Image (cartoon, rainbow over all chains, first blue to last red; front, side, top):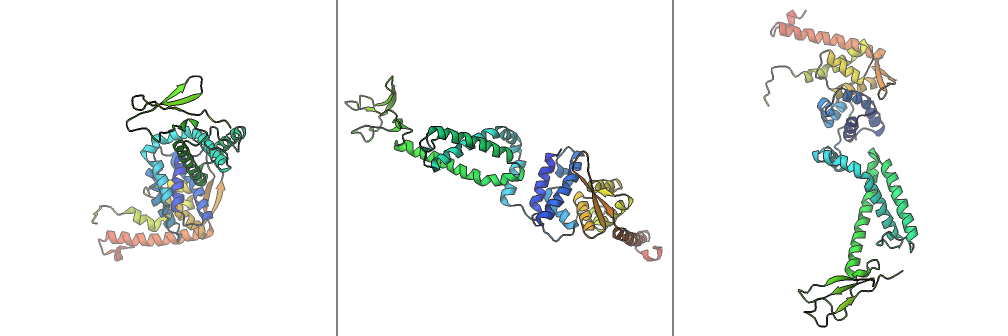
Length: 247
Length: 121
């Protein structure tokens, strides 16, 4: 059984011992792990209360072991992520995030599927995304990506997390691009996935100021119409929107 | 900074004699890192730092004064035990003599209130 406090402390030490050759460093940390486990067993508080801050511990270790290696400062990224993990807010939010992590994995898989569909020329904006022209293949793609993402998520622990940063960032960019494209499609009213957004109003570029239109569902007609108040324009333009174009 | 503390800074004193303290503990009985820290503290060196003991062990090991062997532990990771080598025993003996001389001189100084040398016997 290992103590989470020991893992945290060792990780912090690792950041400061970057100047040591990797093999020497890992061997040193492995030796320390056994000793720190016992230190942890003898105390219920944070290890730093007994051992001092990791930075001071690492410095003392290097000085007393007589190496010429100097203390290294952790990179901005590692110190920022450590500061986050050790903050009070994270202590409250962290466990909750851990709980919803599987939901994030599923969402990530879905976004990956959408991105892949978009890359291969399928329709990324339809739900579910289509692969080429096939909704069935699209569904299969979503299933595969979700399973893959959950599998990866469960395997990605400890130091491996560093390798997840780039793929996740790429997916975030893909998600943003997708949102932007949906937005543009709605604005243009051109995407077939959103036929209701297309307004046909011959003779009217836009409504006069202060006039509001409203959408109405025509029962049974599978149509939406935009109704403009009669008082302003006569005859009232009844704007008929074509039904969803079938593919 | 004029921190006129009434006692000597024992952490500074320890730095000079930690090697000897560690060698002395290991001369009694082989031990692993945390065990040696504990034994030093029980002997009265309450302020000994964990990191300096671990570092000292590594340095003494690298210099050939100590050998090591691994003992599996039931409840946790395997423990690396350290033992004195013949070189280590020699080192301990030599350091013991140096320390006794040094301590004797200082005792004499303190007893004689500054005129230590004649009373240093």
